[in-house]
Image (tube, rainbow, N blue to C red; front, side, top):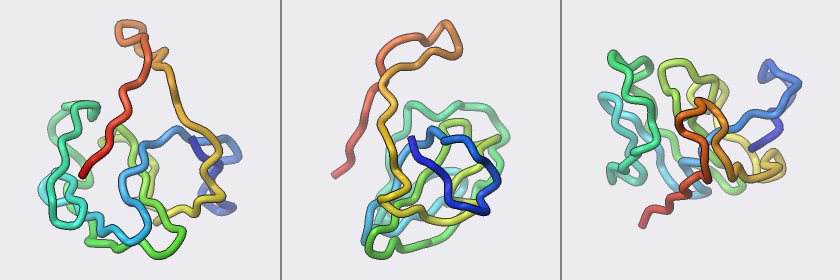
Length: 113
């Protein structure tokens, strides 16, 4: 969860998944996300075809830069639109899914090698 920078277009915090860490290179090719040229498994992404924004980057994160993406990639305002965020923008961690009701429960958190 993070508080968007001024100019991002919202006064409300967003909940997004942190995908790229400082020093990592993020790229999306044909809808698949790559971190440092390694594809990542994303079981949490909505599987709605056709996927919008199927190409992005590559973009290397600088010091104190993080790339965030929404799980609903077809309808998400995220780093693809407004670039990386800084650590000071990150204000919390999502712990529970409440919507849609059929998916209520704790959120799985993933890490990648």
